[in-house]
Length: 546
Image 1: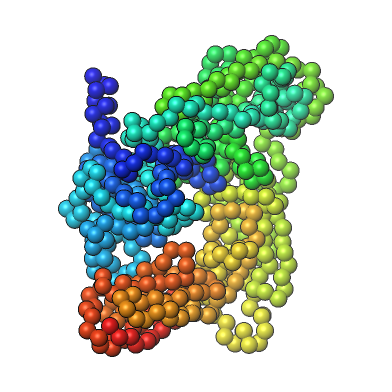
Image 2: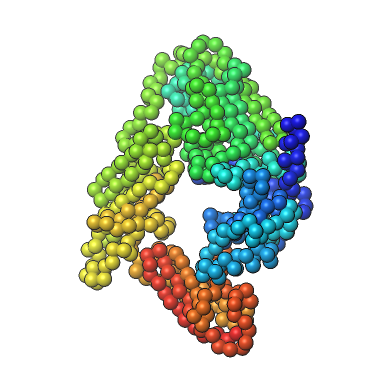
């Protein structure tokens, strides 16, 4: 009976494309600072493939330029899920019309349109968009996500499209890593790569393990994340992960599950088969020791990795580790959790101060204790010194609070026009990180402690230059060399018109045929107003004939 109900449930969903599905990426792949939240479906390297709704429902949201998704459509289904179609080139006429109605009703070009169930209902298999390459996309494809509508947890779309995806190839492990947690492995207290499971392996004390592995599919050269990982010790499960349900708020926990430092150096993900004390991912389960193996008997320990994909294809990797106390006696292993110098503690709020700087990292923002190795770059001729807290990448689970003292003595001409509201915190790449000025300090937020942070000043507005003011499309080039563009709006003859920001360019376009304006060969006045992140505004005006 249960299998019948499940079969009926899954049959509600059909593919979003009208050709055989081939994946460029799967759900849950570890990536820096996030899990891959959906399936990347190939579109033969081109844009313009027809995209269809995978089930009955209604368009609940249309976004343009948000969250790296580019143009995206959200469809809410009566079964409790919401499917999201991303990186689209364009929308179907009905969806595009709903988007334009929202933009003109709210007089906004940046779109996050929330729709009611009756505005744009859709049926399973109905055309909704053309595939594209918008947003944070490096090649044309469809990024498909499925969320639990109530919790907004990311769900594996494979669960709903399983029968439409062929896969007979099992996962493959490339290497394993032993990571002593106060114990030793092969006579060392340092982490050690294991490339040959048949070699003689010894350990004593507490040791964790990790695995570098990929999944594969026939007919594709891509590699994918591992759906399920099990580590057995003497026939009992020490660690078990099933990557099929991930809360969005825990996306950055991927850095704690994976060996992030190793990825930074070698671009390969070793995923830990134990749970760091501050890692709260529900898809990870472990024994009473958090998956860390206690080698405290002089005997052979029988370990086995089982890797499994969503189709049930699996690979087995058994190996033996001999408990051997002899190496431990000659090695002074550091006590677990003890770090030299300053450090971030996973189980408390951390406050770190130096003259001219304060960093506050709240509880839960690191999954394990981490060292701080701060560097101050003295810059007497700028608005502040520059501060770095780690020489290697140290990402946090969420935004920490960074305050830097701002100097005003930058020269007489600057002091005379100094406006503290124009100050902000930036990094070595010039990225705007916000900032509020109070009592001489600029307070902003950071998520990566290896950046080089300082105070910057921006009192210059963005620039606007015309590209084309003829035909059915108005084109402008809009750039900003300081804090970056925050918002823009435009009017024709005093009445609002939409200007779309063209992806991966500095071009902004107004489609006159989609506006209220009708061709009459008359002269019209265009006014374009753009504001940066420090509230510097440029109002640009020109006449055009339409």
